[in-house]
Amino acid sequence: MSQERKLAVLRAIVEDYVATEEPVGSKALVERHGLGVSPATVRNDMAALEDEGYIHQPHTSAGRVPTDKGYRLFVDRLATLKPMSAAEKRAIATFLDGAVDLDDVVQRSVRTLSQLTQQVAVVQYPTLSRSTVRHVEFVALSTTRLLVVLILSNGRVEQRIVETGESLLDDDRLAELRTRVNRVAAGQRIADACTALGELPGQVPAADGALITAVTEVLVEAMSDHRRGERVAVSGAAHLARHGDQFETSVRPLLEAMEEHVVLLKLLGEASADGELTVRIGTEGPFSQFAATSVVSSGYGPGNDALATLGVVGPTRMDYPSTMASVRAVARYVSRILDEA
Image (cartoon, rainbow, N blue to C red; front, side, top):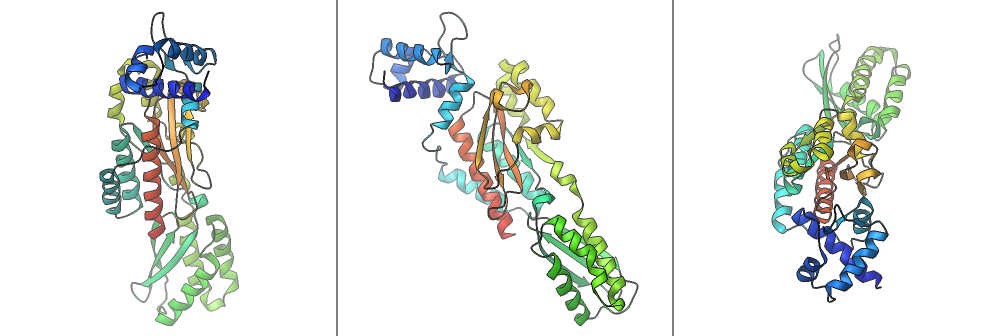
Protein backbone atom coordinates (compact mmCIF):
# COMPACT_ATOMS: atom_id res chain seq x y z
CA MET A 1 0.00 0.00 0.00
CA SER A 2 1.25 3.45 -0.90
CA GLN A 3 1.93 5.52 2.22
CA GLU A 4 1.30 8.70 0.25
CA ARG A 5 -2.05 7.39 -0.99
CA LYS A 6 -3.04 6.41 2.54
CA LEU A 7 -2.22 9.94 3.72
CA ALA A 8 -4.24 11.35 0.82
CA VAL A 9 -7.22 9.23 1.92
CA LEU A 10 -6.88 10.46 5.50
CA ARG A 11 -6.62 14.06 4.31
CA ALA A 12 -9.77 13.62 2.23
CA ILE A 13 -11.66 12.08 5.16
CA VAL A 14 -10.70 14.97 7.45
CA GLU A 15 -11.66 17.60 4.88
CA ASP A 16 -15.01 15.97 4.08
CA TYR A 17 -15.91 15.35 7.71
CA VAL A 18 -15.13 18.96 8.65
CA ALA A 19 -17.20 20.21 5.69
CA THR A 20 -20.21 17.89 5.96
CA GLU A 21 -20.25 16.85 9.64
CA GLU A 22 -21.16 13.36 8.40
CA PRO A 23 -19.14 10.12 8.47
CA VAL A 24 -17.29 9.66 5.20
CA GLY A 25 -17.64 6.62 2.93
CA SER A 26 -15.25 5.27 0.29
CA LYS A 27 -17.55 5.97 -2.68
CA ALA A 28 -17.92 9.64 -1.70
CA LEU A 29 -14.14 9.98 -1.36
CA VAL A 30 -13.53 8.62 -4.86
CA GLU A 31 -16.21 10.85 -6.39
CA ARG A 32 -15.18 14.05 -4.63
CA HIS A 33 -11.41 13.82 -4.50
CA GLY A 34 -10.32 12.08 -7.69
CA LEU A 35 -7.97 9.70 -5.89
CA GLY A 36 -7.42 7.71 -9.08
CA VAL A 37 -8.25 4.34 -7.53
CA SER A 38 -11.37 2.24 -7.09
CA PRO A 39 -13.71 2.40 -4.08
CA ALA A 40 -12.49 -1.08 -3.14
CA THR A 41 -8.89 0.15 -2.96
CA VAL A 42 -9.97 3.15 -0.88
CA ARG A 43 -11.86 0.77 1.45
CA ASN A 44 -8.63 -1.18 1.96
CA ASP A 45 -6.79 2.05 2.75
CA MET A 46 -9.53 3.04 5.18
CA ALA A 47 -9.34 -0.37 6.88
CA ALA A 48 -5.60 0.09 7.34
CA LEU A 49 -6.09 3.61 8.72
CA GLU A 50 -8.70 2.28 11.13
CA ASP A 51 -6.39 -0.53 12.29
CA GLU A 52 -3.71 2.08 13.00
CA GLY A 53 -6.12 4.25 15.00
CA TYR A 54 -6.34 7.22 12.62
CA ILE A 55 -10.07 6.87 11.86
CA HIS A 56 -12.98 4.99 13.40
CA GLN A 57 -16.49 3.89 12.52
CA PRO A 58 -19.02 5.59 14.83
CA HIS A 59 -21.65 2.89 14.21
CA THR A 60 -22.27 -0.15 12.01
CA SER A 61 -22.65 0.42 8.26
CA ALA A 62 -21.48 4.02 8.60
CA GLY A 63 -18.57 5.82 7.04
CA ARG A 64 -15.49 6.78 9.02
CA VAL A 65 -14.54 9.86 11.03
CA PRO A 66 -11.07 10.99 12.14
CA THR A 67 -9.74 10.26 15.61
CA ASP A 68 -7.53 12.63 17.59
CA LYS A 69 -4.56 10.64 16.27
CA GLY A 70 -5.84 11.13 12.72
CA TYR A 71 -6.26 14.88 13.18
CA ARG A 72 -2.75 15.04 14.65
CA LEU A 73 -1.22 13.30 11.63
CA PHE A 74 -3.24 15.54 9.31
CA VAL A 75 -2.00 18.70 11.07
CA ASP A 76 1.60 17.48 11.29
CA ARG A 77 1.66 16.69 7.57
CA LEU A 78 0.26 20.04 6.43
CA ALA A 79 2.81 21.25 3.91
CA THR A 80 1.42 24.78 3.81
CA LEU A 81 -1.30 26.68 5.59
CA LYS A 82 -4.34 27.77 3.67
CA PRO A 83 -3.44 31.22 2.29
CA MET A 84 -5.55 34.12 3.46
CA SER A 85 -7.30 36.14 0.79
CA ALA A 86 -6.21 39.70 0.05
CA ALA A 87 -9.56 40.89 1.40
CA GLU A 88 -9.01 39.06 4.70
CA LYS A 89 -5.53 40.52 5.07
CA ARG A 90 -6.81 44.04 4.36
CA ALA A 91 -9.64 43.58 6.86
CA ILE A 92 -7.20 42.53 9.61
CA ALA A 93 -4.81 45.39 8.90
CA THR A 94 -7.55 48.03 8.65
CA PHE A 95 -9.37 46.94 11.79
CA LEU A 96 -6.32 46.48 14.01
CA ASP A 97 -4.46 49.57 12.80
CA GLY A 98 -7.32 51.70 14.12
CA ALA A 99 -6.69 50.68 17.75
CA VAL A 100 -5.98 53.56 20.13
CA ASP A 101 -4.45 51.74 23.13
CA LEU A 102 -3.59 48.28 24.45
CA ASP A 103 -7.13 47.46 25.62
CA ASP A 104 -8.46 48.43 22.19
CA VAL A 105 -5.81 46.26 20.49
CA VAL A 106 -6.84 43.23 22.56
CA GLN A 107 -10.57 43.74 22.03
CA ARG A 108 -10.21 44.30 18.29
CA SER A 109 -7.91 41.28 17.98
CA VAL A 110 -10.29 38.87 19.69
CA ARG A 111 -13.26 40.04 17.60
CA THR A 112 -11.25 39.78 14.38
CA LEU A 113 -10.02 36.28 15.19
CA SER A 114 -13.52 35.08 16.04
CA GLN A 115 -14.97 36.49 12.82
CA LEU A 116 -12.23 34.95 10.67
CA THR A 117 -12.46 31.47 12.17
CA GLN A 118 -16.12 31.32 13.21
CA GLN A 119 -14.92 29.88 16.51
CA VAL A 120 -14.45 31.05 20.10
CA ALA A 121 -11.40 33.33 20.16
CA VAL A 122 -9.32 34.08 23.26
CA VAL A 123 -6.64 36.75 23.65
CA GLN A 124 -4.53 36.98 26.81
CA TYR A 125 -3.53 40.44 27.96
CA PRO A 126 0.26 40.84 27.81
CA THR A 127 1.88 39.75 31.04
CA LEU A 128 4.05 42.18 32.95
CA SER A 129 6.56 39.56 34.02
CA ARG A 130 7.90 39.26 30.48
CA SER A 131 7.74 42.96 29.67
CA THR A 132 10.54 45.49 29.72
CA VAL A 133 10.54 49.22 30.39
CA ARG A 134 10.79 51.14 27.15
CA HIS A 135 10.91 54.66 28.54
CA VAL A 136 9.90 56.84 31.47
CA GLU A 137 8.88 60.42 30.76
CA PHE A 138 8.18 63.35 33.11
CA VAL A 139 5.95 66.33 32.42
CA ALA A 140 5.70 69.25 34.85
CA LEU A 141 2.03 70.14 35.33
CA SER A 142 2.97 72.92 37.73
CA THR A 143 5.96 73.79 39.89
CA THR A 144 4.84 71.19 42.46
CA ARG A 145 2.94 68.60 40.38
CA LEU A 146 4.62 66.08 38.12
CA LEU A 147 3.07 63.72 35.55
CA VAL A 148 5.00 60.41 35.39
CA VAL A 149 4.49 58.41 32.16
CA LEU A 150 5.65 54.78 32.06
CA ILE A 151 5.85 53.03 28.67
CA LEU A 152 6.30 49.23 28.61
CA SER A 153 7.28 46.90 25.78
CA ASN A 154 3.86 45.21 25.84
CA GLY A 155 2.23 48.43 24.64
CA ARG A 156 0.94 49.38 28.05
CA VAL A 157 1.17 53.04 29.09
CA GLU A 158 0.67 54.06 32.71
CA GLN A 159 0.35 57.62 33.98
CA ARG A 160 0.66 58.79 37.56
CA ILE A 161 0.66 62.24 39.17
CA VAL A 162 3.19 63.01 41.89
CA GLU A 163 2.79 65.89 44.33
CA THR A 164 6.38 66.94 44.99
CA GLY A 165 5.65 69.40 47.80
CA GLU A 166 8.37 71.73 46.54
CA SER A 167 8.65 74.48 43.93
CA LEU A 168 11.83 73.32 42.20
CA LEU A 169 10.63 71.52 39.05
CA ASP A 170 12.55 73.48 36.43
CA ASP A 171 13.64 72.06 33.03
CA ASP A 172 17.16 71.21 34.12
CA ARG A 173 16.00 69.27 37.15
CA LEU A 174 13.44 67.37 35.08
CA ALA A 175 16.09 66.45 32.52
CA GLU A 176 18.36 65.17 35.26
CA LEU A 177 15.51 63.17 36.80
CA ARG A 178 14.63 61.67 33.41
CA THR A 179 18.23 60.65 32.81
CA ARG A 180 18.68 59.06 36.25
CA VAL A 181 15.48 57.02 36.06
CA ASN A 182 15.89 55.82 32.47
CA ARG A 183 19.53 54.91 33.06
CA VAL A 184 18.55 52.29 35.63
CA ALA A 185 15.12 51.24 34.31
CA ALA A 186 14.96 51.50 30.50
CA GLY A 187 15.44 48.16 28.76
CA GLN A 188 15.12 46.20 32.01
CA ARG A 189 12.62 43.47 32.80
CA ILE A 190 9.92 44.53 35.24
CA ALA A 191 11.41 42.73 38.24
CA ASP A 192 14.90 44.10 37.58
CA ALA A 193 13.59 47.62 36.96
CA CYS A 194 11.65 47.59 40.25
CA THR A 195 14.78 46.50 42.13
CA ALA A 196 16.94 49.17 40.50
CA LEU A 197 14.39 51.91 41.10
CA GLY A 198 14.06 50.89 44.74
CA GLU A 199 17.81 51.40 45.20
CA LEU A 200 17.92 54.73 43.37
CA PRO A 201 16.98 57.08 46.30
CA GLY A 202 20.11 56.00 48.16
CA GLN A 203 22.31 56.88 45.19
CA VAL A 204 21.36 60.57 44.79
CA PRO A 205 22.20 63.74 46.73
CA ALA A 206 20.10 64.30 49.84
CA ALA A 207 18.47 67.35 48.23
CA ASP A 208 16.91 65.09 45.57
CA GLY A 209 16.05 62.22 47.91
CA ALA A 210 12.41 63.13 48.56
CA LEU A 211 11.63 63.73 44.87
CA ILE A 212 13.34 60.52 43.71
CA THR A 213 11.62 58.51 46.43
CA ALA A 214 8.18 59.83 45.44
CA VAL A 215 8.82 59.13 41.75
CA THR A 216 10.25 55.62 42.22
CA GLU A 217 7.39 54.61 44.52
CA VAL A 218 4.72 55.43 41.93
CA LEU A 219 6.73 53.73 39.17
CA VAL A 220 7.14 50.53 41.17
CA GLU A 221 3.43 50.59 42.01
CA ALA A 222 2.53 51.03 38.33
CA MET A 223 4.71 48.04 37.39
CA SER A 224 3.44 45.80 40.16
CA ASP A 225 -0.09 45.25 38.84
CA HIS A 226 0.08 41.56 37.93
CA ARG A 227 -3.64 41.17 37.34
CA ARG A 228 -3.35 41.76 33.61
CA GLY A 229 -1.42 38.54 33.22
CA GLU A 230 -4.53 36.67 34.36
CA ARG A 231 -6.95 38.56 32.14
CA VAL A 232 -8.29 37.36 28.82
CA ALA A 233 -10.70 38.74 26.26
CA VAL A 234 -13.17 36.26 24.75
CA SER A 235 -15.38 36.54 21.67
CA GLY A 236 -17.53 34.22 19.59
CA ALA A 237 -19.77 32.34 22.01
CA ALA A 238 -22.57 32.56 19.45
CA HIS A 239 -20.55 30.36 17.08
CA LEU A 240 -21.02 27.44 19.47
CA ALA A 241 -24.65 27.27 18.37
CA ARG A 242 -23.41 25.57 15.19
CA HIS A 243 -22.30 22.61 17.30
CA GLY A 244 -25.55 21.96 19.14
CA ASP A 245 -25.28 18.25 18.32
CA GLN A 246 -22.19 18.16 20.52
CA PHE A 247 -23.60 20.17 23.41
CA GLU A 248 -22.59 17.85 26.24
CA THR A 249 -19.15 16.95 24.86
CA SER A 250 -18.01 20.28 23.37
CA VAL A 251 -20.36 23.19 23.89
CA ARG A 252 -21.19 22.95 27.60
CA PRO A 253 -17.55 22.63 28.76
CA LEU A 254 -16.56 25.60 26.60
CA LEU A 255 -19.39 27.75 27.90
CA GLU A 256 -18.32 26.95 31.46
CA ALA A 257 -14.66 27.62 30.63
CA MET A 258 -15.53 31.05 29.29
CA GLU A 259 -16.49 32.00 32.84
CA GLU A 260 -13.13 30.87 34.21
CA HIS A 261 -10.23 32.84 32.79
CA VAL A 262 -7.66 30.66 34.54
CA VAL A 263 -9.04 27.64 32.67
CA LEU A 264 -8.89 29.47 29.34
CA LEU A 265 -5.29 30.50 30.00
CA LYS A 266 -4.37 26.87 30.70
CA LEU A 267 -6.11 25.81 27.50
CA LEU A 268 -4.14 28.37 25.49
CA GLY A 269 -0.89 27.23 27.06
CA GLU A 270 2.30 29.18 27.62
CA ALA A 271 3.51 31.50 24.89
CA SER A 272 6.61 30.01 23.31
CA ALA A 273 9.63 32.26 23.21
CA ASP A 274 9.60 32.38 19.41
CA GLY A 275 5.82 32.76 19.14
CA GLU A 276 5.40 29.51 17.20
CA LEU A 277 1.97 28.19 16.29
CA THR A 278 0.74 25.41 18.59
CA VAL A 279 -2.11 22.97 17.95
CA ARG A 280 -3.43 20.79 20.78
CA ILE A 281 -6.05 18.25 19.75
CA GLY A 282 -8.61 16.65 22.04
CA THR A 283 -6.98 14.57 24.76
CA GLU A 284 -3.62 16.35 24.24
CA GLY A 285 -5.00 19.24 26.30
CA PRO A 286 -4.67 19.70 30.08
CA PHE A 287 -8.32 18.96 31.01
CA SER A 288 -10.23 15.71 30.53
CA GLN A 289 -13.54 17.57 30.16
CA PHE A 290 -12.23 19.16 26.97
CA ALA A 291 -11.41 15.86 25.25
CA ALA A 292 -13.61 16.88 22.30
CA THR A 293 -11.94 20.28 21.99
CA SER A 294 -8.96 21.54 20.01
CA VAL A 295 -6.91 24.68 20.61
CA VAL A 296 -4.87 26.57 18.02
CA SER A 297 -2.69 29.23 19.64
CA SER A 298 0.32 31.45 19.12
CA GLY A 299 2.44 33.74 21.23
CA TYR A 300 2.56 37.42 20.33
CA GLY A 301 4.62 40.41 21.32
CA PRO A 302 7.05 42.99 19.96
CA GLY A 303 10.09 41.70 18.11
CA ASN A 304 10.81 38.11 19.07
CA ASP A 305 9.52 38.56 22.62
CA ALA A 306 6.25 36.63 23.09
CA LEU A 307 4.50 38.42 25.95
CA ALA A 308 1.18 36.58 25.84
CA THR A 309 -0.93 34.10 23.88
CA LEU A 310 -3.92 34.32 21.57
CA GLY A 311 -5.85 31.56 19.89
CA VAL A 312 -9.02 29.73 18.99
CA VAL A 313 -10.88 27.08 20.98
CA GLY A 314 -13.40 24.80 19.31
CA PRO A 315 -14.51 21.24 18.59
CA THR A 316 -11.88 18.87 17.19
CA ARG A 317 -13.87 18.91 13.96
CA MET A 318 -12.46 22.25 12.84
CA ASP A 319 -10.91 23.60 9.65
CA TYR A 320 -7.32 23.37 10.84
CA PRO A 321 -5.50 24.87 7.81
CA SER A 322 -7.70 27.97 7.73
CA THR A 323 -7.79 28.36 11.52
CA MET A 324 -4.02 28.04 11.83
CA ALA A 325 -3.47 30.63 9.10
CA SER A 326 -5.86 33.08 10.80
CA VAL A 327 -4.28 32.66 14.25
CA ARG A 328 -0.80 33.15 12.83
CA ALA A 329 -1.84 36.22 10.83
CA VAL A 330 -3.57 37.97 13.73
CA ALA A 331 -0.64 37.20 16.07
CA ARG A 332 1.78 38.74 13.57
CA TYR A 333 -0.32 41.86 13.08
CA VAL A 334 -0.73 42.39 16.82
CA SER A 335 3.02 41.87 17.33
CA ARG A 336 3.74 44.45 14.65
CA ILE A 337 1.41 46.97 16.29
CA LEU A 338 3.07 46.50 19.69
CA ASP A 339 6.50 46.75 18.07
CA GLU A 340 5.57 50.08 16.50
CA ALA A 341 3.73 51.44 19.54
